[in-house]
Length: 93
Image: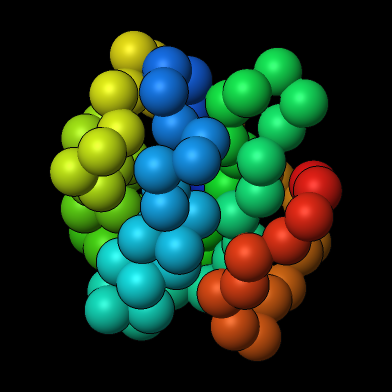
């Protein structure tokens, strides 16, 4: 069963290769979606894929890449019919 989730990661998560690392992790897990920087210095993402792989991705987001200092990860399921064909770094949501 697939799940689509919107994630917000706060802390020192911009300027530390978070988006590029998140894309690499998502592609390794076979997920689709996108990741972007928010104006409030947080990082946002939408990830879509098998429930177990989404759980692994969310756990990865709680630590992020080595230079990140994650303070909080919020996740919200998206029920609307959204389909992604790849996982991309985006300028905004």
